[in-house]
Amino acid sequence: MNKMIIKGSAIVGLAATYYLYMFFIRVLPSVMTLELMQDLSVGSNGVGLISVAFLVSYASVQIPAGLMIDRYGARRIMLFGMLGCIIGSFAFQAANGIILPILARVLIGICCGAAFVAPMSLVKQWLPKHMFGTAAGMIQFIGCAGAMLSSPASTLVKTLGWRDASLTSTYLAIVLLILFFLFIKENNTNTEASEPSLPIYEAIYAVVSNKRYWQVALIAMTSWSIAGGFAEAWGIHYLSKLQGVSLTHATEQMFWMWIGIAVSSPLAGYWCEHTTNKALPIIFMYVISALALGVLLSGSITHMYLINGLLFTAGISAGGQPVAFSLISDYSPKQTLATAVSFCNVGVIAGGFAIQPLVNYLLSLADTQEYQLHDFQYCFSPIFVVLLLGIIASYKLPNTQA
Image 1: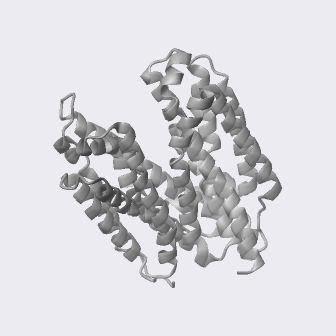
Image 2: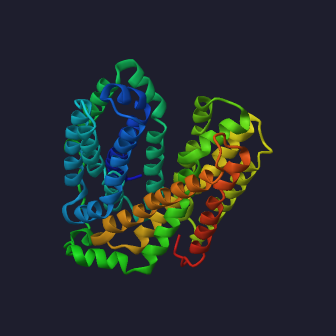
Image 3: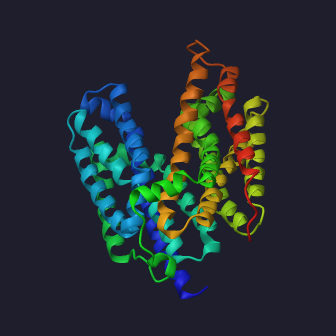
């Protein structure tokens, strides 16, 4: 491994902590719900608005974040992003009502908008093309590690209180700002990177008018169907009902799905880099995951360790996401790479936003205060349709050199 790859890997790894921080600060309000309700004198709807404020603002700035990175570089956008997170986190912990925390979370969501796109842009600059898929998988691996920080975050809130826990996130943002300023570098030495950026409207048109990008975005969207429709929706309640265990135990058990997502992501990226048939990894992961989820939802397996294994296997479908971003790297020139990556990431976010309300609606049709296993089995059925859609979308992927 030459010095350039080592240096590039270190820079990309450091940049990926931006994505890790995004997940940490994303889950923070969810583990301080009761404290926020008591201290700020708000109800569950108010706390829900605080959480939604981040998600909506984060999703809405994906394309603008990509455009700015294409024009001004990842380093500059990362520095401004962390500065905004510092201001937003500090404002959040100082709140005494409902308005300031909502505004603070909007600011944080906007400033975290480049958390995934920025390190992906640096991958293109610093690492060889054949390593893009593996690097994308490793970045997603780091993001999954952030998604599993809910338990440590809960301990932090219980130990320090919600204000000091929020202040800790401010200190973390300050540390990252300093590290990014000192060590994140752009690499514009190659010919492609030195080409001038496109005007905004040309960059947007180049992406949205390309059918290949829509196909890949659809694959990215479907890759997150199990995570968004099961793990982040009513999956924990299903596990609790199936086994007769507490929600706390089921929440800890759900970590196995996140572990499956984390492990499969770099492996899927590596597989994609070493095969000419790009559809093969996607079809394999989707079929295996669908079978595991089907067995899990059948209710025939109740042994804890077997359920853990099924959760792990079901999470493998998320490996389609780094495959999608690897394809984006193949299709996209440097001038529009970040915009194309952000467009693809919108597909991932849209997948979660679309399937969760559908799952909630189907469950609401049960019209009962205590949901039964068959109610959950019915509400999760759209996940299989979405996975099938992803398999169909992957069939027409062109073969490329491994």
